[in-house]
Every structure is written in C-alpha cells, then in structure tokens.
Image (tube, rainbow, N blue to C red; front, side, top):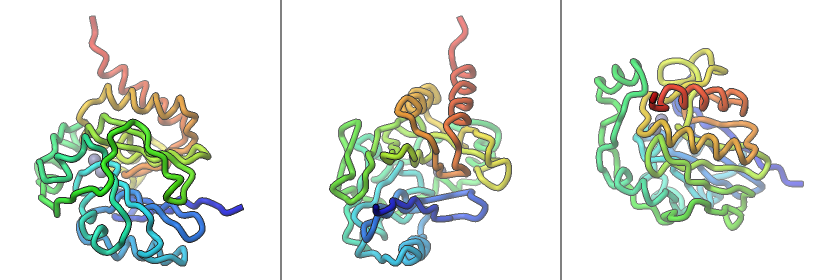
Length: 241
Ligand SMILES: [Zn+2]
Ligand SMILES: [Zn+2]
C-alpha cells in the first residue's frame, strides 16, 4: 500500500516555525509556505521525497499571517498547483493588517518588534473554501480540510484519514514563539483572536479522534496534551458569574 508521509519543513530552527508537505506516491500537498523567500526550503522538502514543483497538486494556507503565507504568492508562481484558503481569511490574504491580540507577555513583546505586522506579497487564492469541510481525495491525499476558526477567522486544519492533523496555529508548544525547548508543553501561539472559538475548534478536532497534532510552532502534540490545553483555555476565558 502506498504510504502517506507528513514531512515537517523547518522554516526556522528548533521547531520555531514549521510548514508541512503531505505526499503519497508522486502527488504532494503543501500546507503553509513560511516567511517570505522560503521557496528553496519547500523545494528541498519536495526533492527529499524525489519530487519537484510539478508534483505539487495543491497548496493550503492554514491562515494568512506572514509566517505561514509569506511565500504563498511566489509558490503560486513557481508551481501550477492551485492555492486554497478559507473565505474568512481573504482580507488577510489581500493585505488587511491582521488583528493581533497577544495571548501573553511574549506576544506583547513580539508585537512591539513589528516583525509580524510587516507587509508581504498579497495573494489571491484559486480555491476559496466556503464550506466547513473540503475533501482532498481529488488532489491525491486521503484527507480533509476543516474550518477551525479562532486563531484567525479563516483558520483551517488538515485532517488525514489516519488521525494525524496539521492544525496550524490553533495551538503551539514549547517556549517563546514555540519550539526551542519544552516541546511537549502545550500553549497558545503568541497571538490569538478568539480563545473560546479556539476551544470549540480544538474540541471539534478531538471529537474526530485526532491522534497527533502537527503545529506551526513547536509540536507535534498527542491528543492528551491538546485536551489539557483546551481545558486550560476554557477555564481562563469562561466568564465568571
Ligand atoms: Zn498565526
Ligand atoms: Zn504562526
């Protein structure tokens, strides 16, 4: 049976920032594109599986922050693969400054550096997801894209049929931006628009028996750690009466 591989593409060292390549046979789906000028790293990941840009059938943006969508426009030019983003993420794809609500002290400091507010090449997705579920079988992968809002309004996750899921910035692990150390320790990414929507999205994924969560910053995390994080968030943001 042909195996489906999920390869982490290290966009920054120590797991601080990851994109992912899902491949099966000679077909591959790219999930996120990293910071601007990351095409070479993506090409290396394709080559490591004996593939090149022509094998890419689809590029998916989990969301349109600069560290995930920064190279999307260039990838769109380099490959013939369509680019998919959720409808609710279109304003950020097209250059509207994102609402960056710090999730803690690191987010507040990071915000002041201005690094995440830098403009990047705007992008027009070829496939605009307007439903909650989008099936990937026609792109050669047994997986679904699920709308999992909260980090941003149009955040999506990619759930493989075997329970592995690429959840973007729905959660993170490690320290500071994520990764580096303590990678088994779940946390919020530096910014999070709507924490209670994050909880609902995490609970939705957990209810679908997701076993292993690949993350944009840090990870991967087992379902038990994600459940713990979801419980912590819920306690912190449930209004007290
Ligand atoms: Zn993000
Ligand atoms: Zn991120």
